[in-house]
Image 1 (cartoon, rainbow, N blue to C red):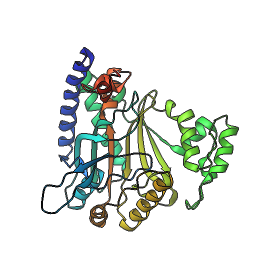
Image 2: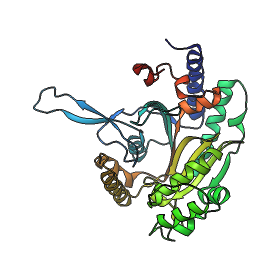
Image 3: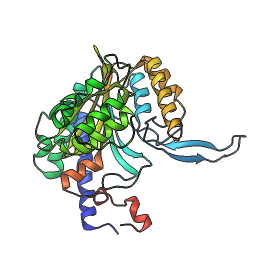
Length: 339
């Protein structure tokens, strides 16, 4: 049976969804719904998809392998390519990761895209949407209404928190990433980074230990300009090959959103997806197939920006909850008697 706190969060969730639909409609977006079962899940290095089997129903076809999507990104970009205009979706997504205070394997996501813009415009829409949600849920303005949100580049925040200049360990054209050098710099800064000399492993160890918890303490913070190797679906920043136009939103040390100025070069996108498949294989992870319909649509897709926001985490922060289970009527953990 849901607790009183869970019942209350369900009522607040209804207000959040109503506010989001009102905001995006007023901004010229239209709401879409795409399938939860897909043949090709997003190719993210450390994200596992839930596999489902489609049973044979005659016609000589055997069982088919499908996956519960971790994001509606591929489908929504195909709609952009077909001339949809600005669009948004509120729905369930699925990621087979460990349960934690911030993660339930099935969770609610807002994802939206605006054509003919870069990620600057999508940040402004994010600010407006979250301020509208706060007014609806809390009947007033507060943390999420402090506009504009802080904007910091990764290079700036690494220098501020660790005195490490990331650019010292990345080639000017993004042609190399010096993980060994970054590891030595981390050790000098007093950060334990384990034995790996892979650039991304060292980067994330530093980020988790020294940086993430400091972000968005006074007001929400957009973190910008990730190393190009960490944004396989984003375009590179014009004139700066080391940097991808990727943005993440943090509030009180919690990651809420991830977005990009979208890559629409199909040849480059295929190269990146194949590289990601190779990395997954090397880690012993499932190497999902490449979505050919998605790649075929990319050349028709206009310049665009998009972002995905974890709505359960937003609700957690608004209501002061300590665990994502407090804002779900039926968290997965209850099925195993862990609640």
